[in-house]
Amino acid sequence: MKFMKKLVFPVLVCVAIFSACKKDDDPVTTMYSKTGIIVNTSKEVPAVTTSNATGTMDVSYDKTTRLLTYKVSWNALSDSITGSHIHGTASTVTNANVVVPFTVANKGALTGNYAGTFTVDGIAIKEDSLLLGKYYLNIHTKKNPGGEIRGQIEF
Image (cartoon, rainbow, N blue to C red; front, side):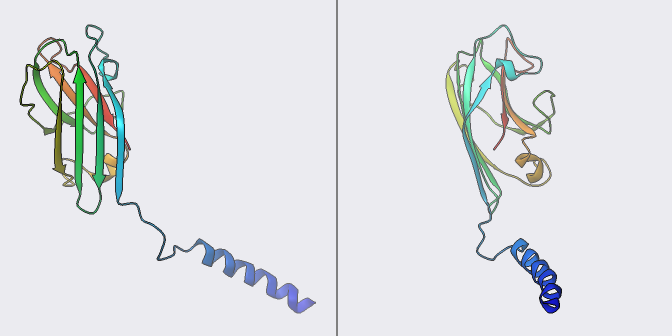
């Protein structure tokens, strides 16, 4: 009986250690995606109250290829587009510098969409910050040069 008591604790320790170890067949997430992210005037900092523009954004990120793919759709912008880009790093309540510009072909389109892909290079866009939701997409217009609609890239 005394022998059994001495054996129980080491066996339990070994079981705990081995069960906490990662198995080779455990899945590792390499692909992240989110669809239907809201892009609108209330997400601007400060919020835009002079427009009814709305939109959505779909994003996906592949850790293996380090490619971020996005598609943004917008409706009812107040005026023509003067800028469209991704900013970072920032929370949902702060602003940041442009890190990836993109050019919408028809800047006069008050309703439209745009899709793009870029490499998360670790310099302009850092993977850890991307996965923490620290970048946002922004569309600027003549009537709202600080940005009319915004959506945080969050997975």
